[in-house]
Amino acid sequence: MSEKIRVTMYNEYLEELHDANCAKVYPKGLHGAIGDYLAKNPEIEFTAVTMEMPNCGFTDELLNNTDVLLWWGHGHHGEVPDEVANKVQRRVLNGMGFVPLHSAHMSKPFMRLMGTSCRLHWCDDEKEVMWTVTPSHPIAKDVPEYFVIDSEEMYGEPFGIPNPDEVVFIGWFNHGSVFRSGVTFRRGNGKIFYFQPGHNSNPGYYNPHVLKIIENAIYWAKPDFIVPNREDYFGKDVIKI
Ligand code: ZN
Image (cartoon, rainbow, N blue to C red; front, side, top):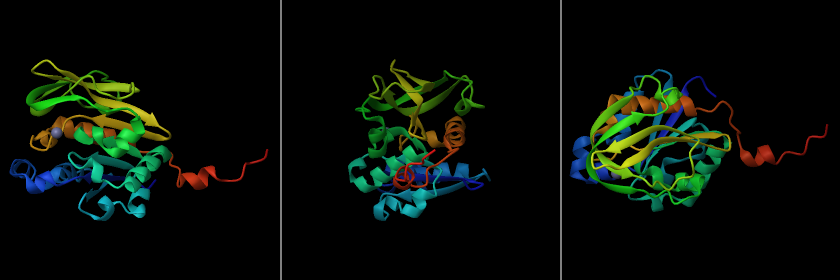
């Protein structure tokens, strides 16, 4: 691993361009809001790619030099090429950290890594109270016992994920729904943290606690070990002792 944590964010980046409500909240895109925050951290090197780029911006070189991948997609999951999803999945299994955000619960890479429906209940704007239910977890560092997000899309249980390794945050919404909002998994050598806030017409990615949690998740998910190329690694001759 290089000295800095190499973070790449894939953002679908269509609604912020073409929907007036989203453009007003995120004039620089969701990746702009998150990127501006992470730019203050000298230990993080941030690169953003978007759907309109060839292959969604994923060159092999970029992916092979990404330590932690953030992913935000919404209405166009199906248009992400299978080849990109396969490569992301493989890189996670090799050790890359993966932080799917909000509606990335239905993204190809996350669904492949989970192997379940990943579906959930949802409805428009509600107030959310985010509870830190595992305060000793590194992703909860410097995050209060609870905080309020005034306006966020409601995501509710049942959430069609496998049982997570850890539930770090639970969201409560003012109509009574609850949601496992921050959950961790390991797949192969890779660490995964799914985090629920971040609907693109709500200002969640300006909330300091939400941003802190994403930053903490980057530190938690960064690989200690990464297999450079899985086929080569596992395709070596058997070592005879
Ligand atoms: Zn949404």
